[in-house]
Image (cartoon, rainbow, N blue to C red; front, side):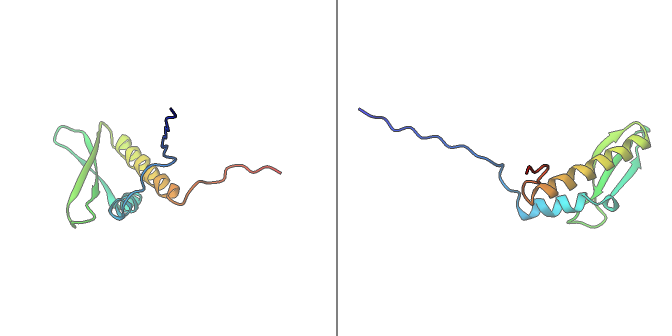
Length: 96
């Protein structure tokens, strides 16, 4: 008796939908971010809600304003990388 066994592998992650791409484009621009100081002295990073004007979504809290700004810069770079990977693999080295 012969058994047939089949497996499946996925070579890539599921692709993000249109809403996700719009959010990534929005948060990859530093002009859509701000830092506010909380009553306890901490600084909170927030980005502008793309659906509702004048509504901000909180992301992180830091002890210093410099730390908060670095968190924003890191987030912007993170989302820019995610968007660049949507164009497929990037060639990093070729051989002759």
